[in-house]
Image (cartoon, rainbow, N blue to C red):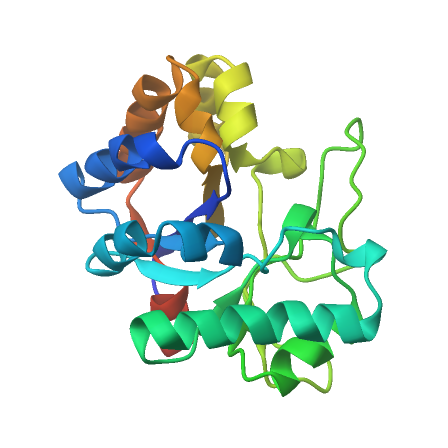
Length: 235
């Protein structure tokens, strides 16, 4: 990858669907490509909206039911993926490229299963996380840049935060003052970072205003915005 890259994504779950267009309108205003990691339940219920989203954004998998993968056995995980893929193919006449595990809970067995099911990239692993915040996702060390896990062909697009692992994510954007992020990007500008949020972040009245200002900060710092498919093609 050339230049500073920001992987932009939204985890689309049950809440906030009707107002998701407010986030997408901001992306459209600033010409921001993004990946929407959509659950199968949302895809099934809101297929008409998903077709609209797909005209401008990549639609990827966020599992079918959003059950955490550490509560499922191997066959249940496989069935989740099968159900999603079948529904996705019925709607879009193609297979999904990418996947993000609910709550980022995945392990090597899960990555192997994704590859076997035909996924080309995953974006579940958080390679570093603030030490004061409990993290229940992937356990183990991982690179801070997109990489192929050992003995795997699937690309991992890590959910990378800022310095000390502070995420550029919906809940953190809502909770931290804007000046905090301005200072972070004055002192440290990693070559790869992720901007991720949930559909329900839009329910916070302050979120949209802060999101727009975050995008301006990133653009001022010369970040290029990519979705998962673009990162996959430029690997």
